[in-house]
Length: 193
Image (tube, rainbow, N blue to C red; front, side):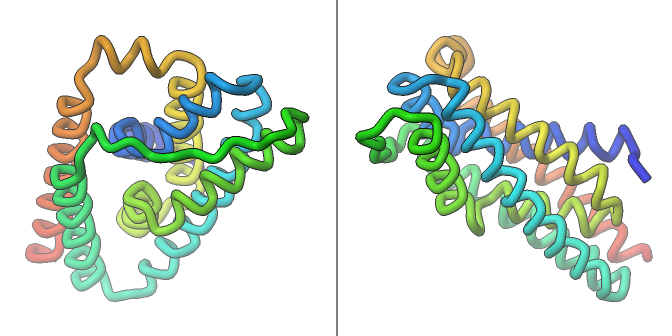
Protein backbone atom coordinates (compact mmCIF):
# COMPACT_ATOMS: atom_id res chain seq x y z
CA UNK A 1 0.00 0.00 0.00
CA UNK A 2 1.27 3.47 -0.88
CA UNK A 3 1.70 6.05 1.91
CA UNK A 4 2.23 9.63 0.75
CA UNK A 5 3.93 10.74 3.99
CA UNK A 6 6.53 7.94 3.78
CA UNK A 7 7.17 8.74 0.12
CA UNK A 8 7.53 12.44 0.98
CA UNK A 9 10.02 11.80 3.82
CA UNK A 10 11.98 9.46 1.57
CA UNK A 11 11.94 12.01 -1.25
CA UNK A 12 13.29 14.73 1.06
CA UNK A 13 16.05 12.65 2.60
CA UNK A 14 17.23 11.11 -0.67
CA UNK A 15 16.95 14.39 -2.60
CA UNK A 16 19.08 16.28 -0.08
CA UNK A 17 21.62 13.47 0.15
CA UNK A 18 21.95 13.11 -3.63
CA UNK A 19 22.08 16.79 -4.57
CA UNK A 20 25.71 17.35 -3.53
CA UNK A 21 26.73 13.89 -4.79
CA UNK A 22 29.22 13.19 -7.55
CA UNK A 23 26.56 11.62 -9.77
CA UNK A 24 24.60 14.88 -9.88
CA UNK A 25 27.77 16.53 -11.12
CA UNK A 26 28.36 13.71 -13.60
CA UNK A 27 24.81 14.13 -14.93
CA UNK A 28 25.45 17.85 -15.28
CA UNK A 29 28.61 17.16 -17.25
CA UNK A 30 26.95 14.62 -19.55
CA UNK A 31 23.96 16.94 -19.99
CA UNK A 32 26.17 19.76 -21.21
CA UNK A 33 27.84 17.52 -23.81
CA UNK A 34 24.95 15.44 -25.12
CA UNK A 35 21.22 15.56 -25.73
CA UNK A 36 19.62 15.91 -22.29
CA UNK A 37 16.79 13.47 -22.98
CA UNK A 38 19.25 10.72 -23.97
CA UNK A 39 21.28 11.25 -20.82
CA UNK A 40 18.19 11.33 -18.60
CA UNK A 41 16.78 8.05 -19.96
CA UNK A 42 20.00 6.20 -19.11
CA UNK A 43 20.41 7.83 -15.73
CA UNK A 44 16.74 7.30 -14.81
CA UNK A 45 16.89 3.60 -15.71
CA UNK A 46 20.01 3.13 -13.59
CA UNK A 47 18.35 4.81 -10.62
CA UNK A 48 15.38 2.41 -10.86
CA UNK A 49 17.80 -0.54 -10.58
CA UNK A 50 19.68 1.22 -7.78
CA UNK A 51 16.49 1.80 -5.75
CA UNK A 52 15.15 -1.72 -6.35
CA UNK A 53 18.35 -3.17 -4.89
CA UNK A 54 18.23 -0.79 -1.92
CA UNK A 55 14.57 -1.50 -1.14
CA UNK A 56 15.22 -5.25 -1.36
CA UNK A 57 18.13 -4.90 1.08
CA UNK A 58 16.00 -2.79 3.42
CA UNK A 59 13.20 -5.35 3.29
CA UNK A 60 15.66 -8.05 4.38
CA UNK A 61 16.63 -5.86 7.35
CA UNK A 62 13.01 -5.90 8.54
CA UNK A 63 13.41 -9.59 9.37
CA UNK A 64 15.48 -8.55 12.40
CA UNK A 65 13.70 -8.08 15.74
CA UNK A 66 12.34 -4.54 16.12
CA UNK A 67 14.73 -3.10 18.75
CA UNK A 68 17.95 -4.36 17.11
CA UNK A 69 16.59 -3.25 13.73
CA UNK A 70 16.04 0.31 15.00
CA UNK A 71 19.56 0.33 16.48
CA UNK A 72 21.03 -0.79 13.13
CA UNK A 73 18.96 1.79 11.21
CA UNK A 74 19.97 4.54 13.66
CA UNK A 75 23.63 3.60 13.33
CA UNK A 76 23.41 3.66 9.55
CA UNK A 77 21.71 7.08 9.59
CA UNK A 78 24.52 8.35 11.84
CA UNK A 79 27.05 6.91 9.40
CA UNK A 80 25.25 8.63 6.53
CA UNK A 81 25.31 12.00 8.32
CA UNK A 82 29.00 11.54 9.09
CA UNK A 83 29.81 10.68 5.47
CA UNK A 84 27.87 13.71 4.22
CA UNK A 85 29.65 16.07 6.58
CA UNK A 86 33.05 14.52 5.86
CA UNK A 87 33.00 14.57 2.06
CA UNK A 88 34.16 17.55 0.08
CA UNK A 89 31.33 18.88 -2.11
CA UNK A 90 33.78 20.58 -4.47
CA UNK A 91 35.46 17.34 -5.55
CA UNK A 92 35.31 16.96 -9.32
CA UNK A 93 34.76 13.58 -10.89
CA UNK A 94 36.07 12.64 -14.30
CA UNK A 95 33.40 11.38 -16.68
CA UNK A 96 34.36 9.57 -19.86
CA UNK A 97 31.98 10.54 -22.65
CA UNK A 98 31.05 8.20 -25.50
CA UNK A 99 32.52 8.99 -28.92
CA UNK A 100 29.21 8.06 -30.61
CA UNK A 101 26.32 10.40 -29.75
CA UNK A 102 23.46 8.06 -30.71
CA UNK A 103 20.60 7.44 -28.25
CA UNK A 104 21.88 3.99 -27.24
CA UNK A 105 25.48 5.09 -26.71
CA UNK A 106 24.64 8.20 -24.70
CA UNK A 107 21.89 6.63 -22.60
CA UNK A 108 24.05 3.53 -22.15
CA UNK A 109 26.94 5.67 -20.92
CA UNK A 110 24.62 7.47 -18.47
CA UNK A 111 23.18 4.15 -17.28
CA UNK A 112 26.56 2.53 -16.69
CA UNK A 113 28.01 5.63 -15.03
CA UNK A 114 25.18 5.85 -12.50
CA UNK A 115 24.89 2.10 -11.96
CA UNK A 116 28.57 1.77 -11.08
CA UNK A 117 28.97 5.07 -9.23
CA UNK A 118 25.86 4.65 -7.07
CA UNK A 119 26.41 1.03 -6.05
CA UNK A 120 26.82 1.08 -2.27
CA UNK A 121 26.52 4.88 -2.30
CA UNK A 122 25.09 6.93 0.55
CA UNK A 123 21.67 7.29 -1.10
CA UNK A 124 21.44 3.55 -1.64
CA UNK A 125 22.22 2.97 2.04
CA UNK A 126 19.70 5.64 3.06
CA UNK A 127 17.02 4.10 0.84
CA UNK A 128 17.64 0.68 2.41
CA UNK A 129 17.42 2.27 5.87
CA UNK A 130 14.16 3.99 5.05
CA UNK A 131 12.71 0.77 3.64
CA UNK A 132 13.65 -0.99 6.88
CA UNK A 133 12.41 1.83 9.08
CA UNK A 134 8.99 2.26 7.51
CA UNK A 135 8.43 -1.31 6.25
CA UNK A 136 6.73 0.23 3.22
CA UNK A 137 8.85 -0.72 0.19
CA UNK A 138 6.47 0.73 -2.40
CA UNK A 139 6.31 4.20 -0.81
CA UNK A 140 10.04 4.28 -0.11
CA UNK A 141 10.85 3.05 -3.62
CA UNK A 142 8.63 5.65 -5.30
CA UNK A 143 9.91 8.47 -3.08
CA UNK A 144 13.55 7.50 -3.68
CA UNK A 145 13.18 7.08 -7.45
CA UNK A 146 11.38 10.43 -7.78
CA UNK A 147 14.05 12.16 -5.67
CA UNK A 148 16.88 10.67 -7.71
CA UNK A 149 15.13 11.54 -10.97
CA UNK A 150 14.57 15.10 -9.73
CA UNK A 151 18.24 15.52 -8.85
CA UNK A 152 19.25 14.02 -12.18
CA UNK A 153 16.89 16.38 -14.01
CA UNK A 154 18.20 19.37 -12.10
CA UNK A 155 21.78 18.29 -12.74
CA UNK A 156 21.24 17.62 -16.42
CA UNK A 157 19.09 20.67 -17.20
CA UNK A 158 20.00 23.40 -14.78
CA UNK A 159 22.63 22.34 -12.30
CA UNK A 160 25.00 25.18 -12.93
CA UNK A 161 22.39 27.85 -12.19
CA UNK A 162 21.28 26.10 -8.98
CA UNK A 163 24.81 25.63 -7.71
CA UNK A 164 25.46 29.37 -8.19
CA UNK A 165 22.43 30.27 -6.04
CA UNK A 166 22.44 27.60 -3.32
CA UNK A 167 25.75 26.78 -1.64
CA UNK A 168 26.51 23.07 -1.81
CA UNK A 169 27.80 23.19 1.75
CA UNK A 170 24.35 24.35 2.96
CA UNK A 171 22.57 21.54 1.10
CA UNK A 172 24.99 19.02 2.60
CA UNK A 173 24.46 20.32 6.13
CA UNK A 174 20.68 20.24 5.80
CA UNK A 175 20.82 16.63 4.56
CA UNK A 176 23.13 15.63 7.42
CA UNK A 177 20.81 17.30 9.96
CA UNK A 178 17.80 15.39 8.62
CA UNK A 179 19.76 12.14 8.89
CA UNK A 180 20.80 12.95 12.47
CA UNK A 181 17.14 13.52 13.37
CA UNK A 182 16.18 10.19 11.79
CA UNK A 183 19.04 8.50 13.67
CA UNK A 184 17.81 9.97 16.96
CA UNK A 185 14.26 8.78 16.27
CA UNK A 186 15.52 5.28 15.44
CA UNK A 187 17.62 5.11 18.61
CA UNK A 188 14.67 6.35 20.66
CA UNK A 189 12.51 3.56 19.23
CA UNK A 190 15.28 1.02 19.89
CA UNK A 191 15.49 2.10 23.54
CA UNK A 192 11.80 2.51 24.27
CA UNK A 193 10.63 -0.43 22.14
